[in-house]
Length: 286
Figure 1 (tube, rainbow, N blue to C red):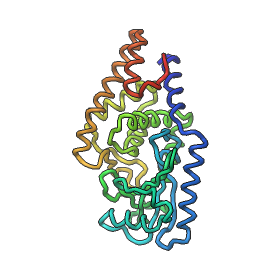
Figure 2 (figure 1 turned 135 degrees about the vertical axis):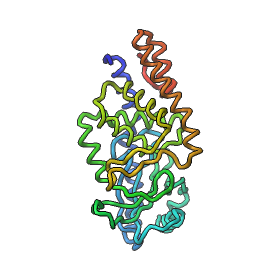
Figure 3 (figure 1 turned 135 degrees about the horizontal axis):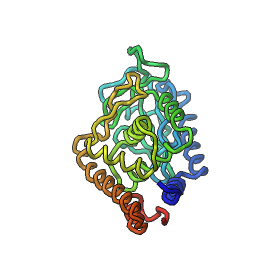
Figure 4 (figure 1 turned 60 degrees about the horizontal axis):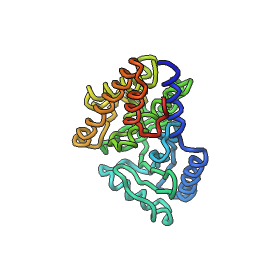
């Protein structure tokens, strides 16, 4: 697609990136938490992950994700793990802590907070590596995860930063419309798209992703960075949430297709209207 619309997407993606100061402030909060639990016998290690670690975070929406590997074997109840996180996080931080689905979120006034994800060492599968851990997925099921493998794959196939930009745009849309779809799931489908076909343009890439999500009704997708490379990634916590998310996804697919059609017809005003319906009034003029 011509440079005019490509430049607009790149400018918007850059505008929603957290500032260096915001990243540093969230990292300092993460480090304070790490310093407070370094002597805690129930914590084995902390592993940074998620959008801040991958360079895809969205200002005002993303949290600084940290996997907290706890000692022992994973319990059947995720709630027990969250209770343990409450117990090991410093008391002064608990005043701003809240459980959100599968994690403990430490809020930071005026900026992105830290999301603590409970985890346990994984073993018993020949494909497990030193960094393999059990983490809760969107459906609150324990699944094997290799955070280092995800980071390596993203770096290997994103030599020019375009894939990270695509992921940030998907997350910006998700946070703007409060779509209850896992960010890890959206990142996974973007990785799948990048591996299956060469990028044509950000608008086409987004359109194809939303259309496929709509057609497949948010079906689980294989996690290529899991020990089995086939472990399913679920989009939502429940079937009900998946049904609720279907409408904004269908609307996004329709708006993206409409933007493509209008742009091909030379109607920039209509193209811009479609894109602002997706990303808000902050999307640049065409």
